[in-house]
Amino acid sequence: SDSAVALASTPTLMPTAVATATAATPAATPAATVAPTTQPPTSGSPVPTAIATAAPATVSVPSGVAMPNPSLTPGETFTTATTGQICQSGYASGVRHVEASQYHEAYAAYGIAYPEPSGTYELDHLIPLELGGDNANANLWPEPASPMPGFHQKDQLENAMHGLVCAGQLDLAQAQKEIASNWYAAYVRYVSS
Image 1 (tube, one colour):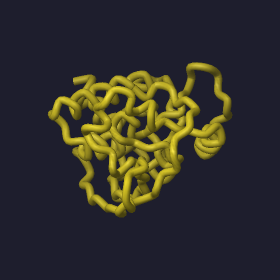
Image 2: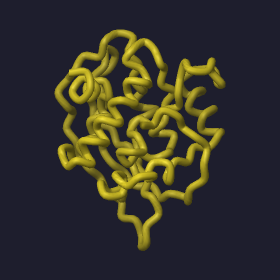
Image 3: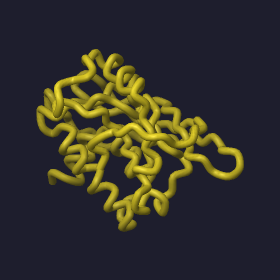
Image 4: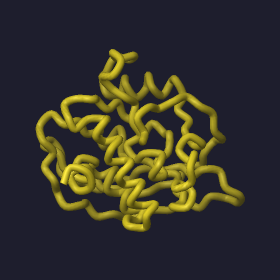
């Protein structure tokens, strides 16, 4: 799960672009956005890619359920991360690298004082590391614990989707698109149903 973003060090990453659909929320309508992504280090030069995605079936997000602002947090991935890599034990901890300054930047962008009272928020990877998400600010948002579903329930979703991807029951790219476009809809589909 992506329950706590720890400070660590990893190599510098190379940017590329991926298109995603934004979530349907009471204040927003589905729209296509382009989210830059980064690649973990590989041998050879990275190749920029763009993937067009359709908006998933609309699920109304209940009032009060926190959703990231898609203009601040559209989601980013390591585009070269494969199912084989993300399913290896230790993958997420090996690529986790969030600087202290990113906490301040992400919380400030959302108008939330940092540090916040313990247990009220976590700095969340919208697309979790365990699904190939990266550490860029465009993939980070301060997610509250309440109202439910909050960050604890999103952690359950991340674990469920990771399990399905690793079992060959859900395509990695599809999992990334679903959680980035409307994590609540994915939660309803994979966890709370």
